[in-house]
Length: 193
Image (cartoon, rainbow, N blue to C red; front, side, top):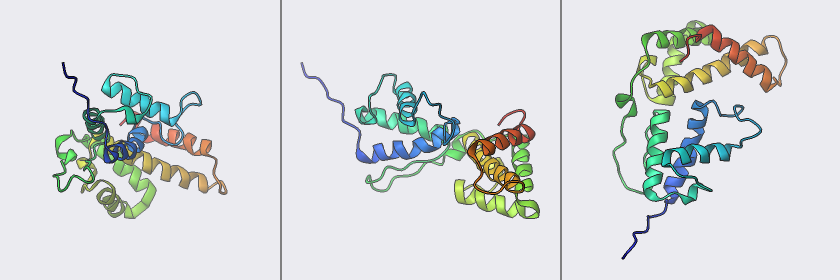
């Protein structure tokens, strides 16, 4: 009786998992400040990955090649971004934004209002440039829901810092920025995004 040994995770796959995790954790609200003292970034990542592969992991290096690909695909779906394996030659990159559902017109309008409040009269051109640079899409309506969440977090962060800087000298405490972001989130997105 021969037992097939699963091919281990490759270096490029491990790097991709760690790179994509940063975006996944931001989408989960676990970015820079969302972690509690009881759970480290590593524990949170391993828990999320363990949930995807349906088995406990001590380290990401315990993944098989097939499991790594499954995790990468789940992360791509979570973030709405494409990934291309390094070192595997030319491969077609899937255009996730064409496969994913788009945000509603109401959500796109709220993002535009947030950008207008942040950038003033120049908001349309600045938002279009930021969308093209970060997500390679022409308008908010082209964003996948995960991309919209990332954009909203970025815009809320910038606007919160601007509001606080008007009344407070730097450095601005993180707690104060998060409180201002929560206030702005209620103002613009009371129904959620």
